[in-house]
Length: 57
Image 1 (cartoon, rainbow, N blue to C red):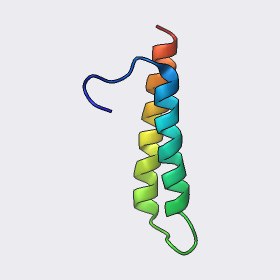
Image 2 (image 1 turned 180 degrees about the horizontal axis):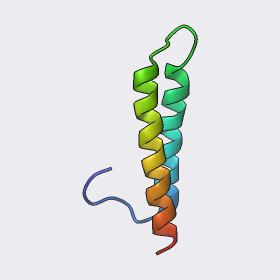
Image 3 (image 1 turned 45 degrees about the vertical axis):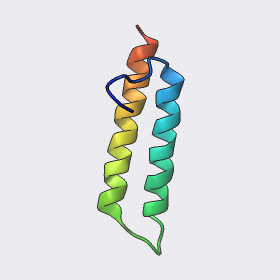
């Protein structure tokens, strides 16, 4: 998302789910890109947190 990001928490949760999906795919036994998976996991956490904070006002 950009500087004019959504203020709707569920938009952030949806983007976080995309990052988690990517992380899971990158940790597959055949792929094993753990560093990149960790990055996507961290990004998902930030997006979940932003959505949570937006939901609390």
